[in-house]
Image (cartoon, one colour):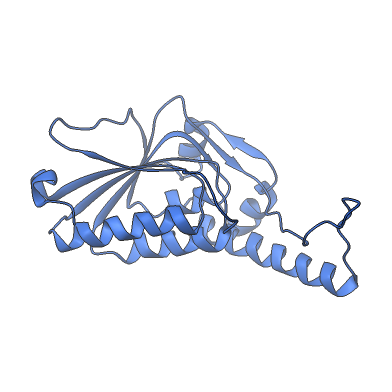
Length: 201
């Protein structure tokens, strides 16, 4: 457990500069559990992520929205793919002026390649994969539309390698204010970063 002395004024600061997968999301959730137990009321969640697993991203988003904390998110670098959804968990959302936002489509693995490097898929496999990708695209678009000034149809069209500057993201309602991230003196920064992967999540 993290000592309460590391949470002055019941505020905690976390930097998520990692891919979105089971290991990194679980580390965030474990730390937040400790924070809540220690009486933390406000979480400043700085994020720079290339995205990753859609299911894990929604898990983290939903947990951040449900936690008994005032969550502020801050783009300190690049926010790509499902990381956009995680970012929207903040009731206050900031961005450094040299950051960026990238929305791109969901990709799905079709299985392992054979000895010749070929991945085989039949009609059923392809149909199921397409349906899964479309479902993910739609739930991402619905969430972004709900927490921005954009409509679902607009977001759905943007999912395909669309890059926003912080100012453009502010105009779309993703960002509330453009400002530099600052960590107050006396507050430890809890870092969630990538570590060597032993297996795919």
